[in-house]
Structure formats: structure tokens, C-alpha cells
Image (cartoon, rainbow, N blue to C red; front, side, top):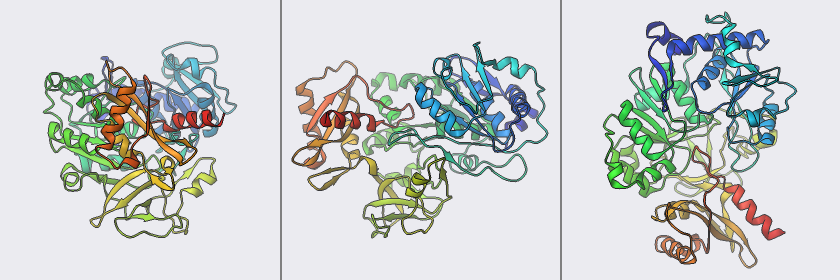
Length: 508
């Protein structure tokens, strides 16, 4: 239930292996997280207080996370891609009393002004106003603090539909250590154990990579961390470290499928026992190809940082209900119309869970908007979907991305899932742009595949490709090209940034 127990029996076992060769053993993780917990206590931080960190994928990330977890603190890992204004907002909003950064993130973190921050710790560098991380640890004992208590992450939404908001859940009560819900899920659904070798290809500041890696530490497995995702590099790491368990996002599937066949077949992937994907919708054709390539070891779940629900399916269930994200494991899923009434089975509406409540930090209005309009205590992530007669959930799209064209509701996810399979497309975003006659019209912004030149002919080809596969009204009427789309490394597309740009131009 805690990496400290692993450190007692096998202190030299790797807790973290970086793809560049850096290693953190369980003994080092235990000693350094103990030392940092003493740093926090010496600062006066008590259970329920808050720290923030802006640290790239590196071993020290886990030292900070486990120190906060064993000291009963809330900790907020912020995205390393944020600007000064965005990071300043998060550090102040969460009320952090300590801020941890690294030399790589100092250019932004060093500009943050936060009155509540009493200590700034810098990993792998030196700067005025910052205490060196190693020196702070060296001055403290490596034994546990006497009042250990379970802390928790307080993560901020990725801001794809508005300003990020912190998701705050109550701290676990009772004796230390507690069993983590994600630990139980990893054991029950994916066979996680002390023998697991888990590959994490995404940024650690995101909910799923962070929580899954820490769950693997709780059961005594080894976590292999990629500094940055690379499709062939991913396959090479699976072979080199005999990876048994990994979690990816659908864009990673797409990028691996578009590797040349001779590259895809070059690596031995036979050690894989469980591959989990989440965070974004996966096109049916993509998942079919991945199951054909890797076998029926692919699992899917639908959940959010908010922790209010968990929907799951394995490969066999998905093949019998293609397109589903699974069945709820935490009580019924309700599909409601705009008034809060439940719709008939199979019809589309907003999805609500009966699971645990949550609140958006310092945003009572957003918290209220996530609740069932009729006051039954159900909560939503804002997704649109349906539930079939067997209880399998299908996602349509985010409510915020719905296009209303000539009075018809259009969900752009279908067009995106179709266009991303075209060999000339590396990435695509579909959304509504202003139209004098229809109110909105469907528009696509495409990132061409490597070596593909954008052209009017390609735009016309993509529109035709989509129309051959979907009803014409769902397809883009226009296509633009960009060298790269604003996609979060976890797979979420910052479609709002693109949409706002087009609407601002139209209103200028």
C-alpha cells in the first residue's frame, strides 16, 4: 500500500527508470520523500495545506508527489507548457505555500508572483530566491515524519473549454497508509502487481499518468517513464524493458499505426499483458487495428479528474459493442435532456453519474453547473452520449463542441474520427465557424502527415473522403491547414483556441 514497504524489503529495486537511463530505486524514493516531508513540516505545513510543482518528467517528480502524499498535503502538478500568467493563476488559486520547479521550468516559474508561497525549491539549478532541492533534502533526516497522513493531488482541468479549475476531493481519513482507489482498479482490472513493469509515455502532471504511476509504486512494480512520446521509441522501450502494462491515448495509437510496416514489426511486444487507453475518444477503425496488432489485451475506460464515475470495457466487450467506452463500475449512468428528465434507452443526452461528489476550487458556479438540475445529487463532466439496453455507454462529444447549423445539432467528433484515418492527415480538429445563412458551418483544420504538402486539391479530397463515409451535413464544408494543432500531450485537443480564433476574426 506504500512504496516504503517495498523499500524495506527490496531497496535496490528500481521504482523509476527514465528512458534516458536515469534511475530512482525504492530505497532512494523512500529516503528522499521522507526528507522532503520533513522540509514541509519544518515550514509549518500541516495536513490539508497545499504545495504546487511545475516539473517535467524526471525522477524527482515522484519524490515531491510521495513527500506530499505522506505528509497529508494537497499537491498540484502544473503543466510545464503553461505561460507565466497561467501558472501564476494556478499557484495563487490553489493557495500553495511551497512551489517546486526545475531548471527547465524556471524561466516561467521564476516569474510567478504568489503571496502565499513561503518556500521555492529548485531542482537541478540555482537562482536567487530559490533553495536548492538537494541541499534542502540533505539537511533533513531520511526517517518518516511522526505524523504521516495520506495526502492527495488537486489537479486542474486542462482548460480545453475554459480557464482551468482545480478539482478538490476530501483527504482520506484513517490510519496511514490508505489503499488508493486507483491501486485497487489497477490490481482488479489490469493485473497490476510487484512484477509489473509499467510504461508511462505521457506528462506526469496529468491525472491518469500520475495516479497510475503512483498505484504501481504502491504495489511495488517498476515505472518506466518517457521524457517525451515518440511512436517508435515507445515500441523500443516495450521490447527493452519487457513492459507488461501501459496506458496511452488514442493519438498515440494513431501515430504508431502510421509507422511503416517494417518499423511496426521490428519490435517484440509479446511481454505486454494490459494496454489501457482513455482521455479522448478512439475511432472505431483505430481500435480495430490495434486489437488486430496487439491482441485482445486492450482495455478502455471513461472517467475524469473529478473522480465521479468510472466506465470500463475490455477488448471482448468492445468487440461485441463497437464504439462503446464500457459499462459503469460505480453505479448507474443517467442520460438527461436539457430539463433534467431521463431520456429513453438508446437516445442521446448529457451523461450523469451517481458517484462521489466533488467541487471545483473557488468556482461554485461551475460546481453547480455540474449537478443534476433536479437535485438528485448526480454529477456530469459535460459529455453527451447514450446508453444501450445492455448498459454500455457511447460518447457523442462534449456539449461545448456541438455545432448548430441551420437548427441541426452536429457533433464534430464523428468527422474527426473519420478524417484522422486518411493517410495524408496527422491530426485534425473539426468545429463550427460563423455562417451568415446557417448560423454555423462545419470547418476542419488539418495537420498534414509528414511529407504531405497542403493544397486546395487535398482539401477537396478530404471533404470528399468524409462525405463518402458520413452524412454530408456532418462533414466539413471547408478545410484549412496548420503545421501543428494545439493538442495537449495527454491527447486532449485545445479546440477552443482554434474556434475562438475564427470567431474573433469574423467579429472583427
